[in-house]
Amino acid sequence: MHALFQNYPRLKDRLDHIPLADLPTPIEKLDRLGRELGLSSLYVKRDDLTSEAYGGNKVRKLEFVFGDALARGAREVLTFGYAGSNHGLATAIYARKVGLTSISMLLPQPNAHYVRRNLLMSYHAEAELHQHRTFGLLKVATAYQMIRHKVITGKFPQMIPPGGSSPLGAIGFVNAALELKQQVDAGIVPEPDYIYVALGSMGTAVGLILGALAGRLKSRVIPVRVGPEAFANARGMVKLFHDTNNLLSSLDESFPKCRLSESDTGIRQSFFGKEYALFTEEGANAVKRMIDLEGIKLDGTYTGKTLAALIADSKEGRLKDKTVLFWNTYNSRDFSKPIAPIDYRSLPTCFHRYFEEEVQPLDRLFTQR
Ligand SMILES: *Cc1c(COP(=O)(O)O)cnc(C)c1O
Image (cartoon, rainbow, N blue to C red; front, side, top):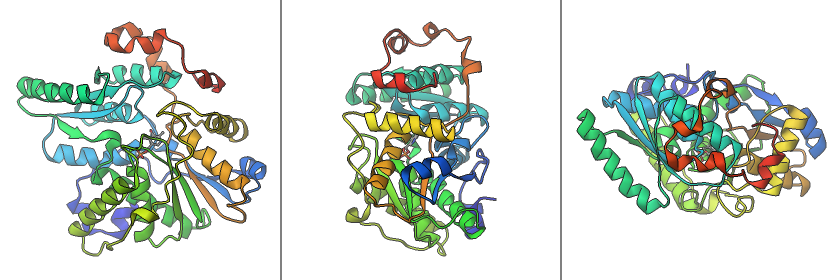
């Protein structure tokens, strides 16, 4: 049973939830990378293995987001992301599993091999895919699609915010922090001093911070900003934190009221680079080190930039004698087989360019295709 429900049994009946993830995810010691960085207590939380079908951090959120959508009688879900969105793909894969149709409203992004893979796999999962050039156009197109689907099915699709980062989505990571607490109590890992995690649409980091406070972990979450400031900022973190906290306390008054102030979010700003999903040199090197030393696959958009922050901090001596946990939010399941027979020309024309144009130069450093 989920750590959240073990700690707060009343929530089990009051929160709609559908099990999708294999929990708890393992924690492993990173001996070789740790040795290179001079860290004797470096660990990874293997959220890349959250599920057989498709791992990564989005599965934990979708358990609560879909639980709610199904309880409301939704038949379709509509969500947002960039062309290579892991969230869009996870939504497509798990929506189909629970009998929902998914619609992805996407924005353009720098090209990479994973963009091609995710688009093909979303197509395989029968997602309806749209792309528009700007946020403004995407909003208009979304209104149109909402109405079009209402006309066809008689019901508006249930909207899921970008990255699944509603309070319900963040609850998936309140549970994750309480799960970590259980692993600490069981002696699987020493209590981390620091937890490094990517900050995109914020649900992951915010849920972890709230869960760590509720579970009285002394661990400090270090959110490394990898998404545009419009989606990843201290104000947004504080709002999502309190909305999530209020929701949980309103459903179970034994859930503690916690606090987070803007000056206390600890967002790391300097690893983002120039643009969302445009890889950085340090990020690409971090990806390469992790695969070479530990055999764990990371990505250039999220986890590489996050590990780059950890590496930089270790070089500055800020992590000396500390227990450090790297939260791996990237999917590591291979789906090259199901996508192999798919011709990209089956996708809507607006996506063909990702297959016809070169990938960004730093993507060539990566071994995975
Ligand atoms: C979405 C995503 C993140 C960011 O998580 P948020 O909850 O959106 O902040 C991090 N890593 C990977 C691989 C992701 O797909």
